[in-house]
Length: 211
Image (cartoon, rainbow, N blue to C red):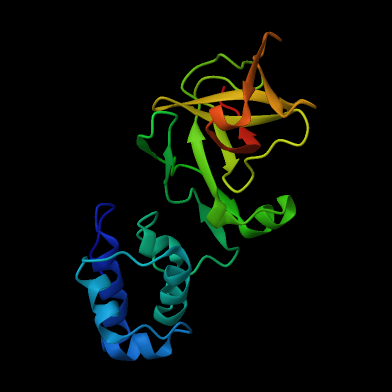
């Protein structure tokens, strides 16, 4: 298979299918979700993009690594330790109602065992790079933060990623008894906000420091 990093998922699916000398209807029939032939065809034609769970099914049937289909690697072989690169970006609506797509960082991978150790679903996580050092030394410019997008409700003081306009801010959040949330900067200064006024992306579960 001749590919480069820009090869889209549609072409990668087709390449993997042809490697096994299968027809599209045969691939669809072997998938647990049993998509209809026209749905599978739309993926190869690039008209539609399969969902994350569907990509996992495709990778299993086509005997390739999910990372290959997603374009994180050009090596189709299945990684024996189940490494996950940084996941697909997600779209978050800011306080003005504007949809902002968060671009993931693809330079670092985490093993399936690491996600299991943290009790996280990799499909609910995103890795982003800090754009400034406002939270240093906890999180400095160019550090990478692994965000659990499914955890948006602070139950105690903890580090969270927030969406402010179209930028990601990292702040300590602490719930108060009156239902408000304290937004705490690294220097200890506090802003009090109502929960509905905050756009919380998720909890920071791990930080990869740069030096």
